[in-house]
Length: 210
Length: 210
DNA sequence: TGTACATCAGTGAACGCGCGTTCACTGATGTAC
DNA sequence: TGTACATCAGTGAACGCGCGTTCACTGATGTAC
Image 1 (cartoon, rainbow over the protein chains, first blue to last red):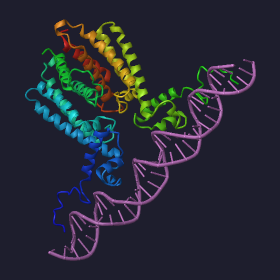
Image 2 (image 1 turned 120 degrees about the vertical axis):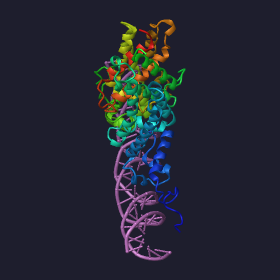
Image 3 (image 1 turned 30 degrees about the vertical axis):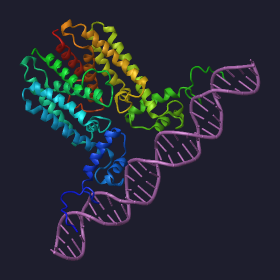
Image 4 (image 1 turned 180 degrees about the vertical axis):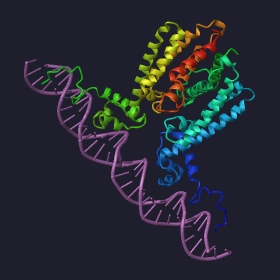
C-alpha cells in the first residue's frame, strides 16, 4: 500500500505536505491578478484548493503570510543585486550600473514580489526576518556605493551611504512611478532602464571631476 | 422659523448640505489613522455621523470617493509646487531646489493626501479629472526642468522631460522610502530634504560644466 | 516484516460580524404664485 | 407676506454575502517495538 517513498511530497495527497509553499505561490498569483490588497485570506485558501481553516496551520493570519512573501521577495532581490554587482567587476561604475538594471529587471519580472515588498502590504517594521532580508538587499547597494565612492580622490570622496540612498530612491521612484500597470507612464519616450541609467551617469559625473 | 440665512451651511442641520466636504475630510482623517486601505465605506459614513446610505448621494462608491480625495490632493500639490517654483525666481536652479523642498514638505505635511495620490488607492488611469490634476502637478516640474535645461549652453542642453522625470522619481523615491511612518529610515544621518537637495545638486552639476 | 500508536495536516460545519447596497420614507429647504 | 408644492439630502431597516476564526474531527504518515 505504501509502495511510494514519502520523501518527495505528493502534490495531490491528502496531506500534501507542501501547503506552505503552495500558499506562497498562490499569493503571488493572486497579487498578479488583483493587487496586493485585492484578495482575502479565505480567497488564498480557496485558490490553493484547501479548506479555509487549512492556512492557519502555517501562518497566524493574512499579514504573516504576506510578510513571508515579502521576505522571500527581498531574499531573491538581494541575490539578483548581488549577482549584478558581481564583486564590482569589471569596474565599480559598470557594476553599479548593472545593479540599477537588475533593480528594474526585478521590479519588472516580479511585480507581485515587488508590490508585496514595497506596496500597501507589509511595512517591515514589525517582522525582524523581513527587516533583515530588506537590509540584506540594501546592503548590496551600500557596498556598491562604497566601492564607487572609493574611486574618487580623497578630498572629494562622497559619503557612500548618501550615494546608496540616492541610487535606491531613484530606482524605487522610477519603478513605482513608471513600471506599474500603466501607472503614470504615457508619452514617456524612453524605457525605465534608460531613464535610470541616464540618471546614474549624470549623477556619477556630478559627484566628481571624472 | 427660518430666521437664519441658508447660505452658510449649518453644520448640524438635518440637511447639512456639506456632507460631500465632510466625507472628504473624514477620509483624510481615517487615512491618517488607519492607512488608505484601513477602513470601509460604511466606516466613513459612521465617522462622519451619518447613515451608511448617505454617502451614496455624493459618491457612486468608495473608489469614487477616494479618487476625489486623490484629485484634490494633486490640486493642492500643484499649487504648492507652483508657489515654490515662483516663476523661476530668483533663478531656475534655486527655484527648482525650492520645488524639491516643497515636494517633500507636502508629503510630510499631508501624508493622507500623499498616500491617496500615490498609495494603494486610486491609480489614475480611469478617472480623467484625477489624471488631469496629476498632469497639472507634473506640469510644474516639467516647466521647471525646461527653464533649468535652458540655462545650459545649446550643445550640452539636457532634454527637459528627462530632467523632470529624474527629479520626480528621486523626490517620490525619497518620500515613499524615507518619510513614511518609520518605513525604512533608521540610522540615516540626514533628513529627507537634505538627501533630496544633495541629490539635486550633484545631478545638476553632472548635467553640465557649471 | 508486522502491528500499535502518536503525530499532525487538513476537513467541514459553524459562529457572529460588518460589509456594500437597495429601498420606501421623511422632513427641511427653496420656489412659484 | 403667506401658502402650496417640488426638490432632494439623509434616514433607518433590510437583504444576502463572504469574511476571519474556532472547533472537534479524521485519516494519512512515520515510528517504536
